[in-house]
Each structure stands twice: as structure tokens, then as C-alpha cells.
Image 1: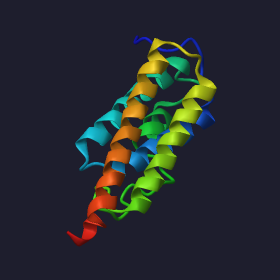
Image 2 (image 1 turned 90 degrees about the vertical axis):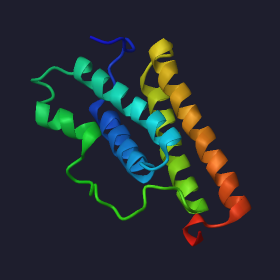
Image 3 (image 1 turned 30 degrees about the vertical axis):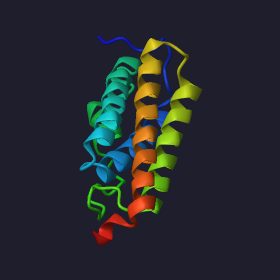
Length: 143
């Protein structure tokens, strides 16, 4: 067992987080600094999910899909896996903000939760850095 907050997040919140993280990681797969931060959050939440819900409450097939492939979400969306436009930055910042707010709303403040929030803050920092780069050099798809 890993260390996790002394609380149980509702499955609907886990489902939302899984969907947002899956989309964000898919969109940033070629941005290592950013995707590794998001991957840390996803893997931590996935582990906590299994500890929060028993096999009878949450079958393995559902458990696997919540963070690593949601059946009703196409995982092969078009895209380069890079952040190339300001709208990419804005969309990803919204996803990260949604994740942060959901974690804060559903888990008490503790070291384990703080580690996730620090990682998400780092993701916001990376997105702001990329935004500045796009503002300076223009749409990166043209390069």
C-alpha cells in the first residue's frame, strides 16, 4: 500500500480526472517536462483509486479504464503531441486547473495531496513558459 490521503474521492471525480489527464497527457506526449508531471499525478491517483475502492465496488476492467483509457473517449485524437498554439496552451491550462480544483475539493490537505498539487503547479509553469515562447515566435506549426 502506498501513502494516500485519509479520504475517498467519489468515482465521478476520479472519472473526470482520468478523462482530463488522459487528454492532457495525449496532447503533451512530446513535451517531456510537462507530460512527466501530469503522468506522476495520473499514476498516483490511479493507485489511490484501487486503495479507496474494493474489487466488488470497482471491477478491474473499470479500474483500468478510469485513468489509462476511457472507453467513451477516443484516444487517437489528431495532434502532434506538442503544444503549438495559444489555444493549445489555454485548453491545457483549463484541464490542469480542473484537475487542481477537483483534487482540492475532494482530498484533505496533506503531504500526499500537496505532492500532486506541486506537480500540477509545475505543469502550469511549463504551460506559461510555452505560452511565452509561442507569443515571441508565433504559431509553432509554421516552423
